[in-house]
Length: 202
Length: 165
Image (cartoon, rainbow over all chains, first blue to last red; front, top):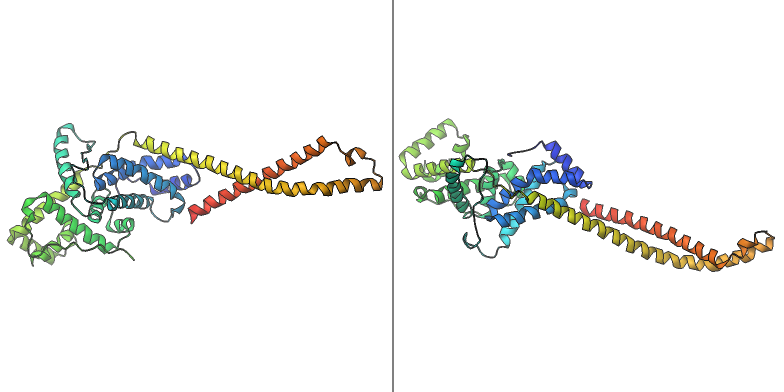
C-alpha cells in the first residue's frame, strides 16, 4: 500500500493507544487520515460526507483498539474499518442520489504542477463520476487496488471476500469503467459481462 | 478466440500473466476485432488515468478536529467512570454503615464487660459521645475508601473485558 509507514511502528502506536496513550493515537490519525479520507471520498463522492466518514472511522478505530490482533497488518485492519463504514453508509442510502443532488464537487489534487492542474481536474472529475456509477463492491475494489495499491489478497482480507470474488469484481469494474469513460468501447461484443452477486468468504 | 474469451483475459494481459501462446492468440484477436481493440485501448487509458490520480487531500484541520473529538470522548469516559465509581462506593459504604451501626450494641456490651476485670482505663470504658462519633466517622471513611477502591477496580476490569471480548 502507498505511503506505508513501518508496520512495526504502527503496531506500537496501536498498542500504546490501547493502553491510553492519546499521542500515539494522534500519530496514527496523522498517518492514516489521507488514505481514509481518500477512500471515503472516492466511495461516497461528497467531501463533507467524506469528512464525517473519516471522523466516524477514527472513532470506530479508537473504540475497537482492544480488538486489534497484532498478528495482522495494521493497514488492513484500519482500511477494513473504513471500508465497512463506507459500505454501511452507502447501503443506508434509500435510493441512488444523482451527483448534482448529492452536492458532488471536486476535491483538488495536490502536489501537481500548476499548468497540469486543470487537465488533471477534468480527468479526475470524469473518473469520479464514472466511479459513482459502479456498484459499491466494484467501486471499493477499484479504489483499494488503484489508490491504496492493495493486492487482491489484501482487498479480500479488508472486504471479507474470497480472493476469486475480488478478482471477478476487479475485472468487472475495469470493463465497466472503461466502457463508461470511452464511448468507443461501449459496443458490447457477443455477451456482456454479468453482474454476478459477490460471494462472501465463508 | 472469441470476444468473450478476449475480455476474460484482459486482466491477465494487464498483469502480464498470460503464457506466450495465449498472448499471441489474444493479440491476434485484438488485431482482427475492432470492438475488442477499442475496449483494450479504453482499458489501458483508464488504467493509466487511475494510476495517475493522487489521493484526495483532507481539509488541513480535520486531524485536529478528530483529535479533539477523541480527547472529548476520553474525558467524558473518565468523568463518567469517576461518577459511577463514586455512586457505587457510596452505595457499598451505605450498606456497610448499617452493619457498623449494628456493632454499637456489641461495643457497649464490651465497655460494660471490661470494668468487671478491674481495668483502670475508665475513660475508655465510658468514652464521651464526641469520641464515639469520631470513631464512627473514621470507620465510615475507611469503608468508603475501600468501597471506592473496589468499585474502581471492578469498573476497570469490566471495561477491559468489554474491549477484549
